[in-house]
Image 1: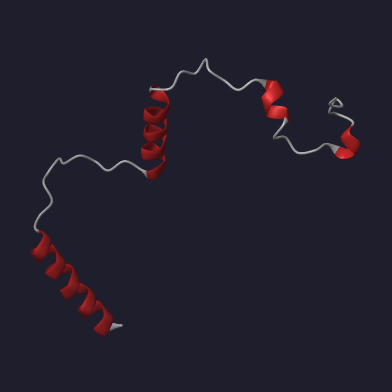
Image 2: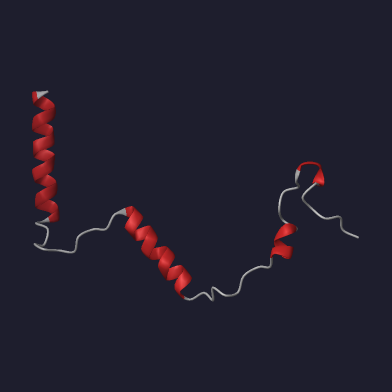
Length: 75
């Protein structure tokens, strides 16, 4: 334990000397979930949300219902 403590202490001070002091009052890092939410908002900002796929077109890609009870027959 004492050896690991000394190695960690030396590594901590060495890294701090190489990187330098962080700027005081710098911008706080946002969490991953906050970054994800902002990215999602930027992605949908330019989209026209009134253009949606019709339900008739969506039925083609829906999984088949058990015994086809919920899908009308195509002719």
